Image (cartoon, rainbow, N blue to C red; front, side, top):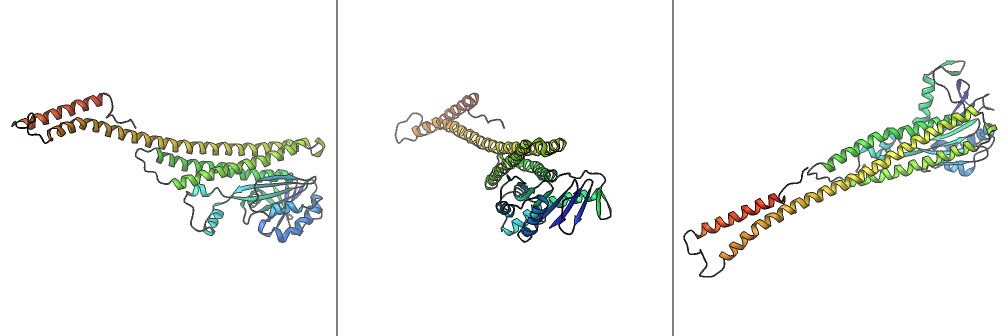
Length: 365
């Protein structure tokens, strides 16, 4: 467990739980989910001492649940937010190793794997629960430390503004998580564009249908995931707006509302893009099968025209092949050439007729 005290313009790493929150500041406790059960007594003491109330048992179970969907809940003392972030490449690699052979889909869609991050937001305390080795919390600390100078055990920021409240820090971390979804859009679009080119290429023999269907299912899962995130953040924003004006300064409220709107807007952009990818994938599959159907129709039209050309020739050959002794031209020396010439003229006339009617024309590609 890591304990960080935020005061105006400074942060400090604490070895043990402070007796009270800093003046005009707050305390941030972040712990890995795998260690939360062992650290739960300390977390509850911090919640009671710095927040004014212990976490409910139900909320503790939510924080311990690695498969919990994005969710928002609240009490009279604190808010609980569970937000699912994208797994890192290292995490997806370990997941693939533990699950055996990789799924039959490109790596871009295997990145649609998520991890739950939980936040308990008090007035002067933020408790965040992360998966093992989570980049979010450490990335924020590294950012603050890279912009800071050290003196007397305190780390004073010199360039970036430190968060002023637990809700502010929570929204910043959630915003970073959402940004990773925005970055994923480009990778997914490139892979789907590649499949579209393969499907629409003339003479395509596309066979990777299992991967395409699996990717389509992953897009559905991503859409559902983003909608859950949107609902959770929208409920948080509604609760923030419903608080009485005396609960916090107006400037602080406006800042939180602006950050919340920004997060929700980013989530909406991801949802709209995912839906567009789903529509494009379905559309290109329909176009592919329409093109295959048109190609089959072209082939059948040509074969039908050729059959029509040879039909009168077969008739003539059948007539002269009948087992009669007296048939015109059959006993003449040049009868064979007259019959072949007539068959050739009939075939040529039919070919010219079918070409003029475009029965033998190839469809433009």
